[in-house]
Length: 184
Image (cartoon, rainbow, N blue to C red; front, side):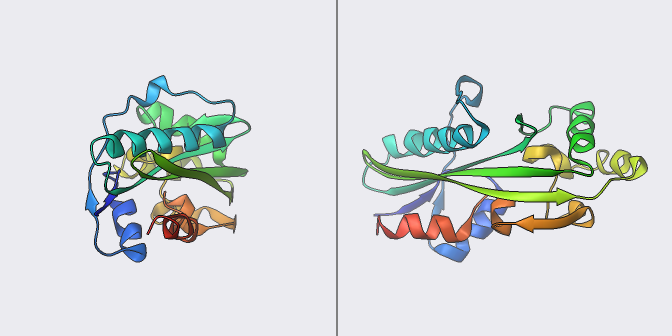
């Protein structure tokens, strides 16, 4: 029985190693645009479940861990930005506000699955326009929900966190470890 991380994210790989140093990576081919849910938190969970189940379908004897993160600002879902204008739109909305980061977690083995969602509140100070413009010209915002990396430049804007810090990076370590324990 192997442990599989159903994500290509370098941040998730690093965080997964805190839970279990011996695992393999296998990404799914899930079309995220076809998945909908009634709330941003449920969307994160549905996406994580779809990814984990897609990989588990071809590896029924293995334990598969799927994750997906979305940022919620005033009820709107901020995924990964499509371009510079989209990144600027998201970051301007987050400036001076508190938003939610939801990460869906799903652990599968064969047809058995357990899923949950972790939510963290993040408060940003007001971000100067020059800083936003410089930031969106770097590669950092473009493969991250909400167009920022809390462990990167966005740390300069963060004035408060309520909840799991690692959740903001895309893998709530404690919650995932607790869920995974039931499958071992």
